[in-house]
Amino acid sequence: MSKLNNLDLLLSRLADPSGLVRDLSCRSISTLLLNPELREKVETSLFQWMKEQKLESLAPLGVLAFLRAKLTNNSFEMPSFKMLKDAIEKPSVLSWIFLRECTDSFPLRLQNMHSSSAPDCYKAESIFEKYSRYGMRPFYAHNVEELEEMHDLPVEKQWSFEFNEIVKESQLKPSPDSFDYKGREDDEHFEVFDPLLNEICLSSYLRTLAWLISKGVSRRKIVNLVIEICPIDLGLWRLENSSRPKFWPKINTNEKDASANNQIWNQLNLLYRAQFTQETDWVIAKADGRVSESAEILDLNISGFFKASDGCLTPDISELINWLFFPYRIENTNYSLCFEGKIKPLSPKNWKQNFRDWIIYPAMWEITPKTALSWQFWRLSRGVYFPAPFILEKPGSFECKKDSLAIYEGPTIVGKWRDWTDGLTDRMTANLPPSTGNVLMIKRSIIERFEKKTNSEFCWGCCITRFCRSGRFERYNENYDYKLYVKEQVTT
Image (cartoon, rainbow, N blue to C red; front, side, top):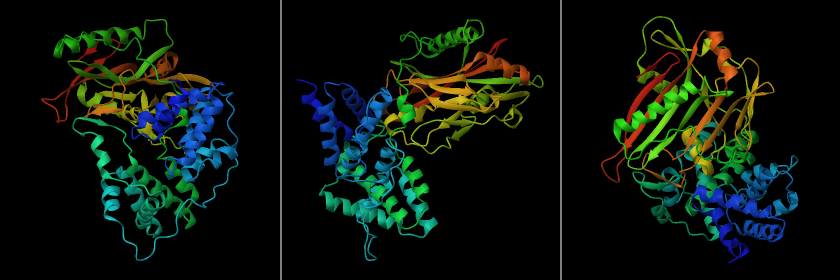
């Protein structure tokens, strides 16, 4: 059977409840669009699929396939803006944001983006009241409550009204029974699962946001709210998935408990010391990910930091390392679909932390993009990291490339972050993190410069997390083993 005979099936996967399936489908369609022999037929079929969509949340997803093709090959010629716009029968602020990536001069027109205001006598249906509170992510209900309080408008009522209007217009029959396929939260389940009922509720949410603009609410504020629910970030989408690096520890799967931990510690001891002896320009400042998931499920976290001593009292190791897991976390202030921005240098004295007689400066911070990343959920679970701004001496910036998130000091790359997805699936098990990993590398010269500036030494705080449970349908218990790696000695 030819690829084109399977095209309808591939296109249908754009509306699959699984976010990861949607991502893979979109990538596959973009690959076909880049094939000169297939492009015309694929483009025609994709436009037809877009026209057939009855929901605002699904209609613009086809645009992402074209944007993905452009990300993959910058010489790809996008269809005309008119063709893209006319293919969306159900316009919304979301589709406007996607189309804005194709042109800089596309005005926001609210016609056909929302219904009239809900009648005074209107009452919400029970299925909406129940589902909007307990089926959707709490984020949506929280935003609606906040908007209603801030602007003194019946936002929740309008959301419910739009939900009913969509059901009547589309003749779709939403049912909560679809959630039976999501799986159990205490066992195997889909991490991202958006069936028809979700899409109707999301589409009615989009309509309500457009209605708010018509009532005088700031357009910029509403656009920012819509960016926060976008399923992808175009910058991070450019970053290709990779396999786990060769340096990541491996264990003999027949070993258990202390023996497995000792294997990891011994490998990390060699790896830590290699950071300062090998002929390499890069130092591991942060790494986090799965080590083993056969008989034992083991995760490893490496957190780099700078240590200066002010006495002979040493800290509690577990307290220090647990703090290093999440020392500082900030949101990207750039409201856009592309994860990039500026980094302002900071004074290290305002960000140091004392643990008994140790003065600690974390080598990395965590930063979160503005988009929901529901197609790239593992990146939110594991986190995205960049060098602590006080390490830099000049204004910095960051941008996504195909091989890494590149961090600059002035015009020079001083940091690289990337992740790997060897064991990734669209299903998670109970409270286990995804079977993925990530690493942040910082230029050795930057590390050594900060050591000299603060009279400190670069160290690692490491933790092995062992997940275990006595039976299915239970959450995993987590057991921790900690170790510090410093230049002069290894402390447990």
